Length: 495
Image (cartoon, rainbow, N blue to C red; front, side, top):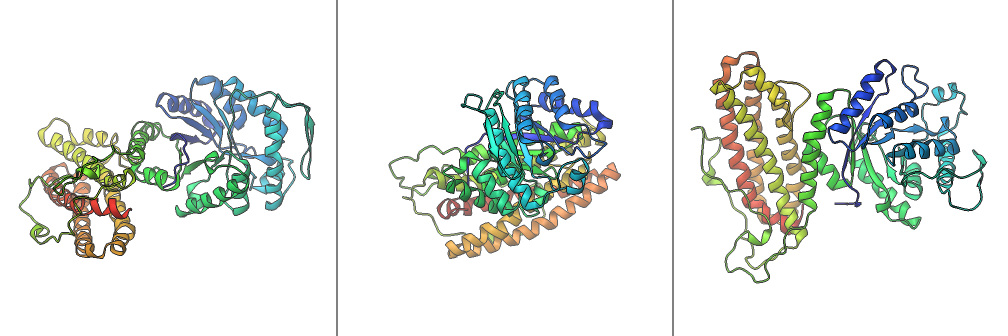
């Protein structure tokens, strides 16, 4: 799990619409009040319905106090690097060190050429970027002797240095292809791709590898380059935490134009991701030095959640007495902090599932008791962590079902095959867990139908409660069984 050592940040990105200029500024101020770290604006000067992004950045800097600012991203061909450096330093000084510089090679060449800029091939655009970054850094190095003296293929610059920015501005590059990724590793401070353009989440890992290799060849540490990610849609906190832990992404940027989604991302998703990532990365307390005589979980640094035996329904979707058990662990085995974290990760994910289920049950209880009506319940659903931008119980179930499905799919595709290879004796347990996955998914489909029916007919509350009770009995039993059998093997064999 790469950790490039950067603080975890959460950001939003806005379209700089000229027709909604006041709204864009107001949303930026809301992002600051909500506790977000960064606000960014797309930059397409050839789009006549957009505000000029540099002018907007200056205006928002004056209208805010603490939130960081950046373009997302500035097309280099439309702004000469020496002028770009001066503009960036000036904005950083005026905002008291809150500006970062994100650059791209362009891409929309017909539109760029229509603004009077030279039309470049993709290769020429990368060449120009490689020339521009040293020019920008030289301009910011106000204490260096002499003037900027650059005589390249694309830029001829002989100009005085300065002004110096208020802080060390980061240069982030929007890069996708190998050559641009290598430029990022050699020259940049951050990599800023967009998830929809990557298409496959695994491309982040491939890009990291190219950047890290280029950084090492240039005598730099891969930790010098921050990893950022533009999100195409709002993702669950658990999935963002996985991306942070698996790929070292430390800045998540959500494109948004709705204040409710913005506040949800800032006040619910961001804290949840930080908590999940911190729990994974924080070393567990050292194990006791003296071995225990009994086989316990005390040296695992994690305690599986036991099944309390409470059942809300008389329906049993499986016979719990037929569940197989895995090999008994070695009672003298001690686990490193990293191994303890591997075991604890499963419990952390399960605890999130339990908490979301408890919130759903609480809302149903409030409706049943008359404390709130169905409409108010749906409004409360909008404040919960896992759901779409829709104020319906059905939409919450869709998101909750997606979370459970994502967790089970990841186990079926990656975790269970790994454990089968490393510990064949676990096969009967893994087979049974996969069978229970299928059974739970059938129950989830029933819950989903009951929730949708309830939204249209509040008299269906009884049926809704019955299906949620069945889900509760089955899912909580399953989670406890899985933790009992897999926490120790995961600690020993890794994820």
